[in-house]
Length: 472
Image (tube, rainbow, N blue to C red):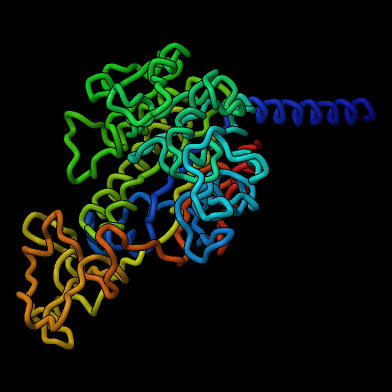
């Protein structure tokens, strides 16, 4: 009897050891999706635009959800740098600051922003770098990647692999990416494996139509460091991610095109870049950390061109759908993969009036982008001046009637459904200067550890939950 008991205990112990070893050997995959500026009203409008009021985007179907507080260390309304950095580092920092400690100032004592100083981080004594999820994943031996539709040196992608006092120091941010070069971020060890997006100008010297004043050709340096490079759609298509160790794709000089304007023969979609990144990163048996940003949602909202913002939100959602399909080829139940989808901040976009249901937008139906129509009948609802107005508006923006609205031509669905139409705003600001909003944003999650995302939480807590889920 004692022998049987001992044998049973030993078998149980060995089983526990085997389970622990299997868990230790399991891949640790994290894919973090960030819709820049994608507040909940923008999500709602994009859903109606794409699939109608009763439809679902992929992000709507994620089983776990939470609401995220976005304020920064020094501002009620954040900019993208500290809000994304809070996710990546678990640290609150000041507006404009990229992955630095809370005491870091974005400007010197005279109020001048630190842009392209001689030090690729910050002047001595002005804060210190704080570790990012990408750096932590790299230290654990995971493959790492960054995909965006903005410049790869823009605020959101920059928070994953660089540390600077001011987000506008994009030459310095680019230098921090290049292994062994001056200003390299040594916390990246042998380098980030995959980087794709726009922003080629910050990797090239002025003589090559770039913006580097130091004369360096960072693309040449990356190639010398073993990276493959794609600068066009054709080169992107020719790149075999399953056989290429490390690669960089920079498809435009500045930001990539809005999805509404994108020439598919010249620029890959966010979904296509995401799939290729996953294919490249999953060669690593230890797992991957990938950050994917739908960055131009934010830019379209700043210029109050809602149609562009909604289309880019749909393109972002397509990337989530494509990522789920690709990951499930090797991890069908997402037992080793955590996917998180969220935004860094809100905007001032609103849905006006008691509009009747419009259904999705089509070439002959502006849908949510059209005028407010009464639920009884088809007449446009009128404002206090007796004039029609749009379903989508902004709290502030460049298009605000100056004077009596009755003196202007009445809006119609054709005019407001145009790709370049700027929705009206309550407060007039300079062109392109619509501001962020300060409300909570949505977070959705699926896969390993996703059940820990619920309720209302600070953006810094997301960092800890991702680390815990991935065992980093």
